[in-house]
Image (cartoon, rainbow, N blue to C red; front, side):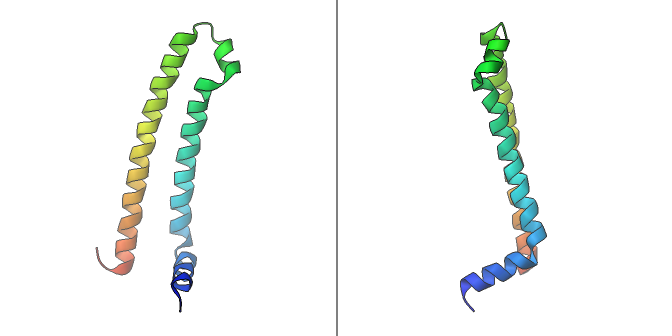
Length: 91
């Protein structure tokens, strides 16, 4: 049995755990890029009369979302590693 076969079998057994991990990472990245994309959208910027304050507010909010996503990714990674340690019996 090759390493690829072992990895594939492990992913089939733990599909729920892997899917939760990958979907949560994907949602976090999509939320960040959607939110930060507002700062550079010309239609939204021209609709707001006070553009400098808008860009500053969106930039600050984007950094807050970015920090939240970073902590979320670190937490999800920690949770995933704990599950893997339980699976191997090392933790």
